[in-house]
Amino acid sequence: MKKLILGLIISITLNVTAQNTWKVDNAHSSITFSVSHFMISEVTGNFGKFDITATTNEKFETPSFEVVIDAATINTNQSGRDNHLKSADFFDVAKHANIVFKSASFKSLEGKEFETTGNITIKGITKEVVFKGKLNGVIDTKSGKKKAGLKLTSVIKREDFNVGKGMNPVGKEVNVTINVEMNQQ
Image (tube, rainbow, N blue to C red; front, top):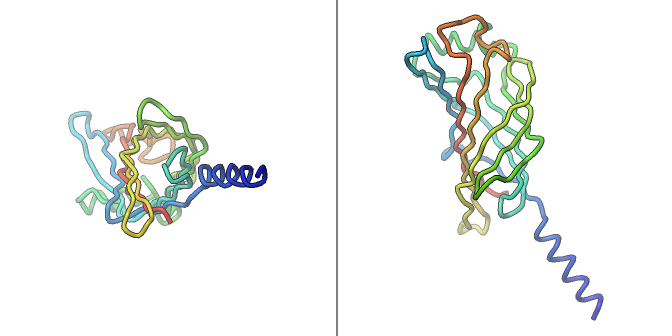
């Protein structure tokens, strides 16, 4: 009887702490940004191609994230500006194809809010950044797998990464928003 009870406890513990891989549902996700221009307006844009992987349990508690963005897919709906953003003045996509974020820690806040801290590499420079997030929910699907919805935001100081250094009409702080729907694998 003791072996049966011990077996049940171990089984329950493993199921509660089991880690799952979650992948981005690109059709229902976006990475957008905004930055001031001449301190009187904001320019917005997005990245069209990215991959996001999370490792966490079925309730999407304490996830770790890896985000890889194809910098050449930057889009501000103005081709001249987009080409300039891809140049060595900004992202230098010929030499630095990807922007990469890897989380290192996770902190639960009030309700479904959290912070995840990690390193982001832009234009070959790596710095620590904090994303504030909110877990919008986790649902079951017909396939038996789960879906999770999240929103993460951060402010990145572009000149810390030599992105547009000395370009004074462009704001020094870039607001980043990631809206992501993730599929349990």
